[in-house]
Length: 224
Length: 254
Image 1 (cartoon, chains in turn blue, green):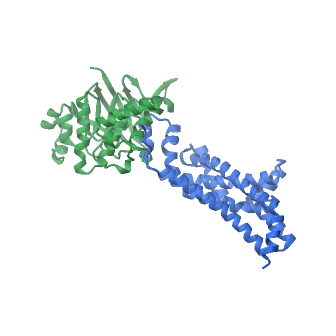
Image 2: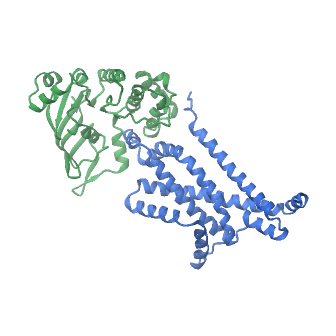
Image 3: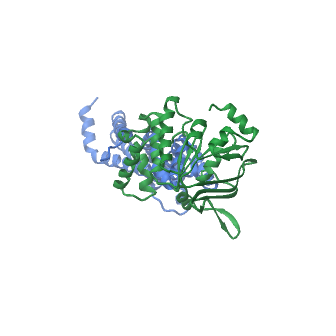
């Protein structure tokens, strides 16, 4: 292998590679954050909502989770422009991933909330908390512990799913890599490099997840 | 004597099944009232109506003179708002059979949660009051432990502190010792007994007949969704009038 040539190529395309990595991270993080917030609302609606909220939330989870992400990406991109919503490829891509992420987070949270004993809600009611207080102080912190490992998996999935945005022309890491390869034909080397970068991003997410998990499980805080 | 709990013509259904068929009951300030009866007689349901963990369909419950859970609007009986109900629930303290401590919080935080979030105390005030009650139930040394690090009896004592720290008008105990190992029952009963001696108003649903006899001012025997007999424990246990109560007392160890 011509390693000198490869390193030379990496150096000369480093701006593009960094740019592609930044786009991948930006797309993934936006989708994870927005999707998690929307997913929490959907998870609460499907678990505790009144019927007119619960059924649409249930339908949303089932339909979006059952749709291939590639179809979601293409549908969001083309439907949004067809209905006159002037989303660029980047916005449409982030929207598609957000919707997908929300369906998973909603389902993860529902599972975690339903695993909590009913007595927790009753104990919260008995001390006079309203549902908002019960959710915030009693149910959500406990559900978070159950949900965290699966949530991390979902977040990693989002990073992987962001590669699909290459088909609508978002210059994320994969598309950037393909463009570089079309110039220098170093297929294997540059795909391996892209793979390594994806691995590092996912590894970082998992480390953050572990750290949060440890923080949640640490012994009760001492108070004065 | 000031009535703290007043129940009038209370009816409660689960679907077709009527589980409370017209209950009338008064608990005066400082009184300890035990509700006994076989399973399915409606005693736990009655207790849960007193803090609105169960809805009821007819009749009225008053706590400290205030009618709780429902109001009349244009001649219609409607359920009070969630915020009103939450406030009314805080007038009673409840101790559950399964303790229901919050497992992600220390014993101390279990007690302070309601004080800061419902009573609006500062963290410092809440900790001070929580410490007082944890000391009172003998759990001050374990204030930083999580529920999983405590025995059943210790958890139940923390649960008692959590309920009573809220300064309720009446304490409700729902079979508070039924889930405990036999050797842990005594410590919890002792805690309840000492609170009773201090003049706390209490309603207990219990299977501990000896305890009901020793600690109660009044014993209520429920059968088939009705109060079949009530009176001072001495009378009720020694000269039961109804055949049902005679049969019930025969099967329960006294």
